Amino acid sequence: MWQIFSCVPLASVVFGSFIVYDPSDVIPSSEWAADNAYVFDWHSSGVTYQDIAIKGPYYYNRQRKRISHEVLENHTNDTSVLVVTEGSTLDVEYTTIVKTGYSTSLTQSSFFGANAAVNNANGSSLYLSNVNITTHNGAANVYTHGNTSVIYAENIWAYSSGPVSHGFYASGNGTIHAKNVHHYSGGTRCSSFSGDVPNGYIHAENVIAHTDGVGSAICFLQGVCNMTNVVGYARNAPIMFSDGAMGPVTGIWKDSDVTAGLLAGILIFSDSAIADGSVTVLDNTKLTVLGNTMPALWAGNIIAVAYIKSSSINNTASGILAVANYSSVTQDFDYYAGYDDNNELSPAQLTIHVEDSDLSGSLVAFNKSLLNFNLANYSNWTGETKVGYGKSYLAVHLDNTSSWTLTGNSALQNFSNADTSLSNIISNGYNITYDTKSVANSALKTKTYKLSGGGFLRPE
Image 1: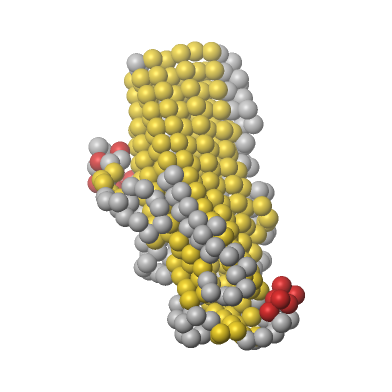
Image 2: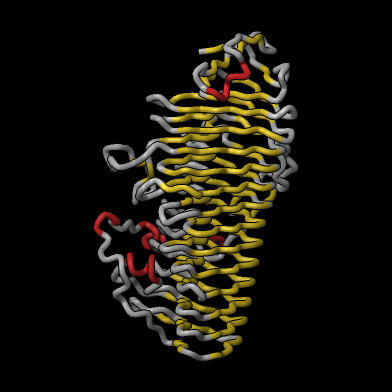
């Protein structure tokens, strides 16, 4: 269980606190501590194509069936409990599913569901209603694969232990619709929801999710991660890894209260060549970031856009709102990869659009990265801009309803303000400098302007 401090995620307002319970309160994590402590060497992960056959005692091929009020179990290695394939349709209700047994290849288990409790593939449709799923030894709860493979899950209680024991996993353009879900995973690299190679499409609503392991986010995104009314805590991960390596990705968090404990609140990257089309949305959502070096948003080796609307971000430990970097994340998911780890990276390009939100924290750009920050519709920001190292590009734009309160001197490539009086900037004695060579700054006419609070806006 963990405590949530704001039950309505509106900017800088606290309405009280409440206790959230998840499946780990029913099955103590200590019972599976050894299972969750196992760390696999992903640097020698083996083949990346399926070479273990998907099999299990409840196997449906080109069938239409219904299962009700049953207990389904399997305790054998490299097997599933329930397999639905080749265009089958299966309805499962008021049923308990239990899976133990190890995978001889965690790559096969992670990417192809070879040891998952439930495996749905090849154009099949699976309906899960009022189902309890418990897995151990590195087995995912629910897996689907294939363009027309769909899972509809409602009223689900799911517990998993061991590495790559994802909650709900969609790949190969498979789709999962999940509603009223309680999920816990204790192992490494096992997110509550995951979409992966080539893409997965996750739509989740009314979720309580808790992960403890390193690299275990609430959602790992390749494809679409559409999350509504989620209360989530990723103790050793961001709440979302957004990997745009395979093309455009969209991560949406609406009406949610989520907490991240490692690396960043949301980590946006490409694990191969730099890619364009990564979109992140926070809508009426509270994001809490716990670590004293963690930014709320981090982007590396990616071209990305983030929209923050009617949301609050609590990252008082680090005071860092957003980072754009020449970097990525390692396969260990516990530190950022720099040039020594990967010399084929590119500087990030991150644009953030803010509406109707009060935000605080620094904007930091590293080594030729670009960070573009736009405030609109009664938004307020308290912070400064910083260059981590190397020449980078920072831009701030305000409409006439929004304000900026400076916490330090800030140098900008581009600056624009719809309030020509500049009364919406409270300088606190700090200065803003702008690049006279930038066409975007031509309206400033290379002049120096006095700001409220004793600072100046002046050419560099």
